[in-house]
Image 1 (cartoon, rainbow, N blue to C red):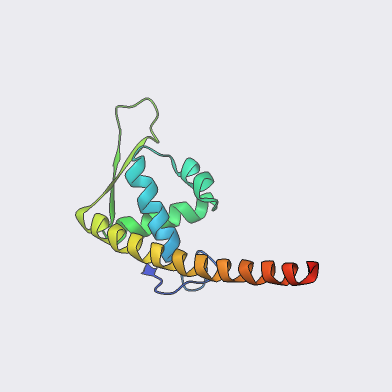
Image 2: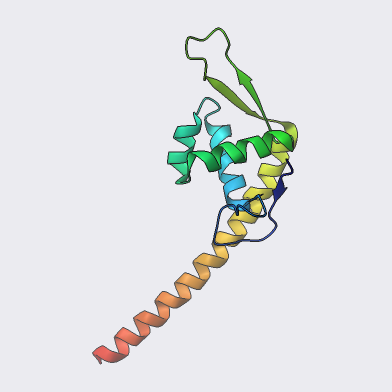
Length: 128
């Protein structure tokens, strides 16, 4: 199975036909795994607001492209206990994704602020 990381923002986190991972989801998964390497897929899905299947697909893709590695605790009574670790490549990619994420959010913030300022101006001119 081939995995591809999207280099643009789309409305959907992943598309079934092209099997891609959105950059924001890629960033958020790497960030969450770095914060808590013991997080379960179900917890990750809930935290990110995406489906469990989407999380599973994303983790498989990130393992395949070498951004994370996974260890299963065989001696643990909970056989599904995993430890997700970012690889050096994953850490580098997370740094780049963080920078890009902040740029995109700052652009969104400026656009939203401009829109709010315009609405406030309209309300003020109506009240005068």
